[in-house]
Structure formats: structure tokens, C-alpha cells
Amino acid sequence: MSDSHRQLRVINLEYAFIQGFYWISFCGIVSYAAVYLQDRGYSNTQLGQILAVGYILGFLIPQLLANLIDRSEKITVYRCQWLLFTFQVALILVLRHLPGMNAAVSVLNALLIGVEITLNPMNTEISVDLSLRIGHINYGAARGTGSIAFAPVSVLIGRLLESLGTRVLPTVFLICIALQASSLLMLIFTVRQVSPDGASDRPLKENTSTLSEFFRNNRRFFGLLAGVAFLFLTHNLVNNYLINVVRNAGGDTSDMGLLSGYTAIMEIPMMFLYDRLLRRFSCASTVRFASSMFFLKALAIAFAPNMAALYAANILQMVSFAMITPAMVQYVVLHIDHKDSAKGQALAFGMVTLGNILSSAIGGPLYDALPVRSVLLVGAASALTGAILCHIFSRPATHAVAAVA
Image 1 (cartoon, rainbow, N blue to C red):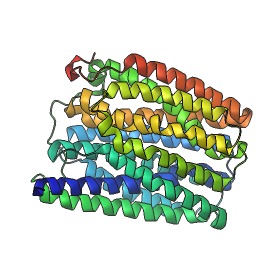
Image 2 (image 1 turned 30 degrees about the vertical axis):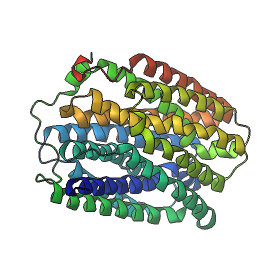
Image 3 (image 1 turned 45 degrees about the vertical axis):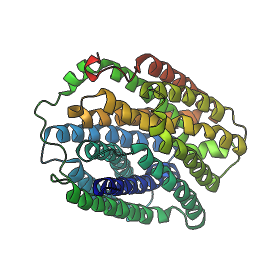
Image 4 (image 1 turned 180 degrees about the vertical axis):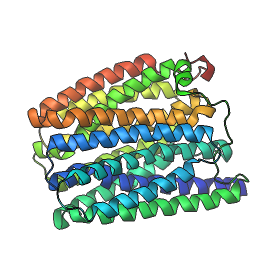
């Protein structure tokens, strides 16, 4: 094995650590937000409002940072990561000393969720940057590592909450952020040894598109993104309020942790095998197939009468969420000019976040007003809409980037 090949394997491993520690942190900060805030006295509607604001911030901040990263040589994705980590630590330290339910707790939790979501497209842009400057980064395998990490941690947090209560969460958050920062530092040191440019991002892009130019040149891409937003509205009507879905099926907080871990395990095979799948199928065809599976999964969850049926329904996670996540990253690489790469990745994840915003805005009132199954059927209708849009606007991988219109 050549030195360059060995170095690339090390960089892939270190990038996988970044994804793993990120999804551990996401598990606590976002997936358990409902449990954390309900314990402080928040209703489903109030919880939905906080999540909605957090997701709005998680949509807007990446667009701003992506535009700066695409245009600036000094503002890099790596420097943005350090800033976000520091801000998260400050928020958590303040929250630890704020009791109960008040405006400050609401605002700081929304900010914490928004920053955590922002880290996701920033992590993806790191993989694109490394692929362009050093060699192939297997995003699917790295993201699969995130699912591997998410699964046991979800179960562990569920057990900790049952025995110690939600006061343990801020400490968990701080440990996770420290691990993310350590893995990023390790990656940067390795990249500086391999690349003469170091971890400095791509050179200044004088011809980077404005947002309006980007829209005019990529209209079909925006149609596809609308479909993705509807899919993730459905996805998060379940995930953001999973405790409600689990309790409706006869479970409790511990069962929620087990189900979250099991669902994450279902994602792992597809995440690792997606690169191989692309050898036989186009990226666009995998997007279309995954969107159809989102709809079937939504129906299965809606009609699940007990925990066993919920586990069975979530087998479809491997051909829905686990497939479309690496597929959209690859879709941007194939169909968006690399000078607009950060913008494309931020928008792709932005639509995921938009789905979260919509689910947070309507989910709380819906769960307060309707039976759980009725809310889940609303989600299934949204998934069907998203699947139709994905089928219409995704296009074969053989098309050139310049042909997007």
C-alpha cells in the first residue's frame, strides 16, 4: 500500500470520527429535546415553537456561512466549526444554571438546537473539500459511523434519564462537544501533513454564483429540494415527538431510547454500502426509490398498534432515510458546480431543516389537538407529496451540470 493511499485511509477514518461524535451530540441535543423540555414544564405546542425557532436558525445560519465560505479565503469551514463549538459550550454552561421554564431557557435551547443543526452541513462540506483536494472521502461510510455511534448512545441516554433525570444531559452535551473538537483537531493535523494547502479550504472563488443566479441555473434542483422538505416534514413529525408515538404504542422513555438505537442500527448497512450501490444505479434513481420508501414507512408507523409493529416499520429506515442522506450529498457533487459546493450542500441540508421547521410548527398543535395516529397520517400525506416531487425533479446522473435548467 502506497503512502498516499495509507494517508487517505487515515483521513477517511478521522472524518468518520467527526461524523460519529457529531451524531452522538445530535442524539442528546435534538433527539432528546422533547424529553428535556417537557421535564421543565413545556407543553407539546411550546416545545414545537422552540424546535421551530431552532430549525429556522439551523436553516438560516448555514446559508450565511456557506455564502461566506464559497466567497472568502479567510473564512473557512474549519474556522466556522471552531466558532460553533465555542458558542455551544457557552450556551450549555448558561443553561446549566437556569432552572425551570422561562424565556431565557426557551431562547438558549432554540439557539443550541440551531447551532447543532448548522454543524451538519458544515461537516458535509468538509468531506467535499477533502475530496477535491486530497482524494475520495467515503461520506456514506462516515455517516454510517454516525449511526453506529448514535444507536448505543441513544439507548444509554434513555437509561440515564430513567435513573438520573434530565439534569445529566448538559454534562453529556459538553463531553460530546469536546470529542467533536478533538476529532476535528486530529483531522486538521493530518491534512496539514498531506496537503501543502493544509486545512484551509479551496481558493477564493471570484465567480461564485449569487443565490439568485444559483436558483436560475438550478431550477430542477430546487424542485427536488421541495420534495426533500416534505419527506423530512414527515420524518420529523415522528422523530421530534417520538416520545408521543412510543407512549401511544404502550412504551416509555426507556423504550424510546431502545427504538431510537434500533432505528439507527437499521441505517448502518445502507450508509456503508451506498458507494457500491452507485456502481449499478444512478444517484437520481436512488433518490426516487428512497422517497417512495419514506411514504411506505410513514404508513407503517401510522398503523403500528404496538412497539413490536413500530420496530417492524422502522426496518424501512435503511431504504428511506439511510439511502437519501448520502444520495443528496452525492447529487450535489454530480449536478452542482463545485464553485457553489458549500451553497449546494447547505441548501440540501437546509431543506431537511425546513422539513423540521414545518414539523415543529405544526406538530405540537397537531399532537395537542388530534390522536397520534391522525397526526401520523398527516405525515404520510406529506411523504406522498415529497415522493411525487422527487420523482418529477430528480434527473439521470448522465446529465451534465451545465444542463440544469
